Length: 234
Ligand SMILES: C[S@@+](CC[C@H](N)C(=O)[O-])C[C@H]1O[C@@H](n2cnc3c(N)ncnc32)[C@H](O)[C@@H]1O
Image (cartoon, rainbow, N blue to C red):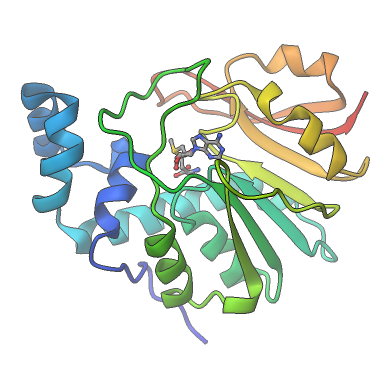
C-alpha cells in the first residue's frame, strides 16, 4: 500500500485539528482570532472558514516531522502504544504507516471547550477532541478497527496493560500536570517503557525517573518546551 503525502479527513475534522494545532491556522485565520476573540474563533470561525485540503496536507507534514523526532526510540518488537492527548491521532497514523500491526490506545477527551486557551492549567478543564471524528479519521487513514481503542479520560476505565511506548505531544505536562497521571503510568510501565512528552521543566523529571533525556527543543512554540524521553520510575 502506498501513502499519499496527506491525510484523508472527515468533513468536520479540520476544525478540531486547528484547535489542537493552532500553528496550522493560516495568518488570516490567526488574525481573525485576535480580532473576534476565542469564543467566536472556536465556535464559528473554525466551523465555517477553514480549507480542509490545506489543513490535511499541513497536518500530515507536521505529524511526519514529529515522527522523525521520536522514531529512533522505537524497538522492533514494540507492540503496545499509548497516546495521552493524541488529538485526532495523526501521529499514530504515521507510526502505523511505518510500523505494521501495532496496537494503539488513546486516552483523550470527548468535548470541545467553549473558549480554548492554550496555557498551563491546574484544573485541566480544557479539551478539543471528538471521538466520532477521531474514530473515522483513524479508519479512513488505514488503521484497522481492531488495532485501536479510544478511552475517554472523563468517563472510561483506563486500560491496564504494560505499554512499550507512551507518547504525549503538547499535552501531558504541557497543558496540565504530569502528576495527574503518575500513579496510572507507574502501573502500566515496565522499566523499559519509554515515555515521551513535552515539558518546560525537564530537570524535575530526574526526581521521578532513572533515565531522562532531552530529544528535541521546541523553540518555535510559545512555551519553549523540551521533548523528553523518560524510563524506569524511581
Ligand atoms: C494541544 S493538543 C495536542 C494534540 C496532539 N498531541 C498534537 O500534538 O497535535 C492537547 C490535547 O490534549 C487533550 N487533553 C486535555 N486534557 C487531557 C487529559 N487529561 N488527558 C488526555 N488528553 C487531554 C486535548 O483534548 C487535546 O486534544
